[in-house]
Image (cartoon, rainbow, N blue to C red; front, side, top):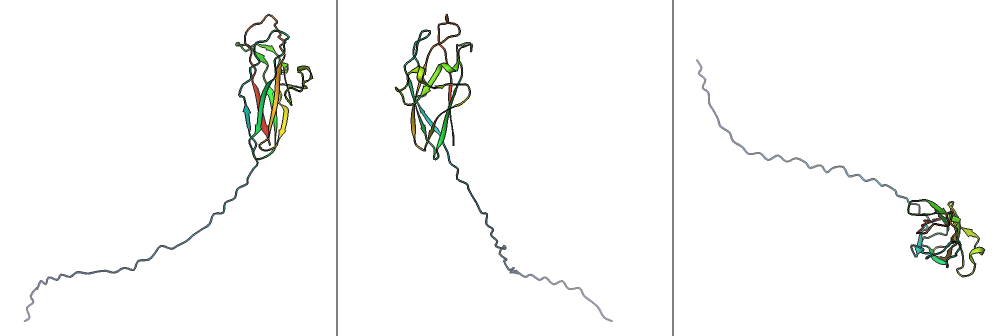
Length: 162
């Protein structure tokens, strides 16, 4: 008869497993870039405000000079427009066209200045890059209410396009 015995064997072992390292797939792509260089025109205006002084009805101011420089890289056209002359309550007491301008300073009298400031932009000058024009502005007081005394204001807007 045969007998069987159970034998318990204990085994211990240390294993080192070597795995191949696979580098990630290398890829590259290019992205082209383009740019279109445009011409620019800009304005440097000095001084930054005009003061015509104290004037009576019918009086004409001395010329106030604005130096207008094209600070861009292209020729540009400079335009000016202006608001009507108003008091502190925004009442219009004088039209914008009472302000006149021309080039060169000192050459034209007020009545000979052909350019009147309008609420619609008017061409002042064409300027090349870096060029400056000296524009003479002058005001003649013609109030809608001759009895008015006080301060009036007008806003001039100068713009450039190239």
